[in-house]
Amino acid sequence: MNVTLAIKRFNPETDSEPRIQNYTVEVQPTDRILDALINITQNQDGTLGYRRSCAHGVCGSDAMRINGKEKLACKTLFQDLVDQNPETGNAAAAPATIEIEPLRHMAVQKDLMVDQGPFFAKFRAVKPYFVPAAATPERGEYIQSPEERELFDEATKCINCAACYSACPILDKNPDFIGPQAIVNAARFIFDSRDAGLEPRLDVLDTKDGVWPCESHFECTRVCPRDIKITKLINFTKREIKKYRAARGEETAEQK
Image (cartoon, rainbow, N blue to C red; front, top):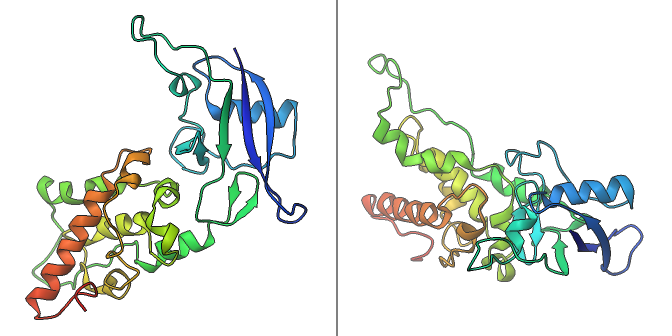
């Protein structure tokens, strides 16, 4: 079947405004959006800019907005973008046009490529690495039970694709919000029984631009390609901060 990809293109070095460029490609229902993009660059227009790496939904580099929703191009099949016939269960005819845009809340570098620098700066700010609790002679190995592991297992699935960051409506009005992805990666260690915990990360998380701006719109959870319950993890992190502050007779940044 033939489909048209309406791709939002913009090169800040040469263009004054973004433009939509249409490409018609022949695809199978089980082809991926990434397959069509590769077809375009190989056979129609080698100037089209986009990122890709593993092509198997692991690296997260090809996240983009497809028909207005954040998705991975390597995991989105054309048959996923068409309505199913309620009687037969088969995919209906492909839509005339599929719209493809870059992720939001990040400056466009070229076409579907965005500047991830500020995004990863927020990620690094939450100390997304193991901060071991103080060692003692009695401790020995850091034994962890399956129940303790389960507390942060969900957060380990994050691939830093920035789909949640793009979908977050809070960033529309507060670009300094640290963002859902950073909080998820903080939660991965906050709830790890082997980690020193919350305190080293409070100077970022417990601020007016930390966890508190989140209003639980669930957009981040809806678009996550790894099905992470992002909003749930954010709310668990808020609760943990409140418990920490209350135990010390302190107020959170939200309460001040």
